[in-house]
Length: 423
Image (tube, rainbow, N blue to C red; front, side, top):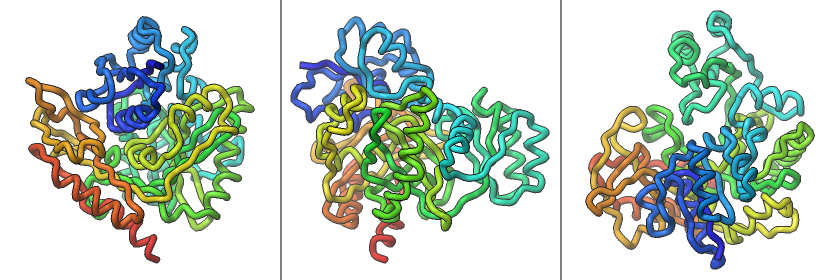
């Protein structure tokens, strides 16, 4: 039996663990840190995902056969490099490839070098220069912190005041720490958004099923941006023709470009795309599985995830089977009241046994033997069905069976996609 570790502690990691569990060769899976809701499928360690020394020591002491590094922070810090240096094979990019997400300035310069279509932009290191630029630039405009910012480092400014506030928050008030010392100001693009996760071994790239995220906290895309309030897959706007264009102009040039620059990317590469009237454009790269996109993509995967992951590590992806179900998936996020600003924790979680296999736990702890809330996004409830309409209906039916104090969700997950499928 093979013993594994999955670095991370949210709903994405729970979905990865559950998918890995389908392989009969796998014995114990350790989650670092994990959360209490993963206990039926993994050993919870509590080791922080950014404590690289503790992670390496644990994995070596337990003689682990393979490690999946899931979140952005440890990847950008060099977790894969540290584990590989001790002889432990990993799924995930090394530090010099994870910079594709770790620095938006690097990503923009990289796309320019390799003629990969993206929004026009300007980079600023001085607050005075940035303020002068936004004083008369076209609106709306997009202002991004250069480094990792927990998904909160992007502002779409529709007024001069919003643009100025975003610049000052990042560069003067250091709202994102050193991640906002440098900022990127981009042109505002329009069109449907698409998320495409892709397996890659640094030479071959194999896109997964496309998906559609719902970032705003409230129905009809109102309220603040969040880490994601729900997803559906596949995305109706991502047609075969669009997929072919993306492969030729974005996916392959990215993989080839990274290899040419001595930064071969192995693992999961996330493409955040905007389908503009002038063609697909890259909004962002992520160096890992998306959350909550993973919660709809992996339930549609028919092939063995562990086999695919090892192929990415060993450079044999070209000859590895990857097959997805011809079906639809919908994931509804249950969050704590007040998210994404402030929220209370510690409320008892009631998850009936009948929906537990389709529930991915993102933020939970254990208190006196009872599962309690321990985060802003608490659960992701997923349903798979022959049609999107059935998947949405089933996901919400399951969601209604779950309860905790202050629970809320969006009630329109998938509706935009549903309208698009019917057009």
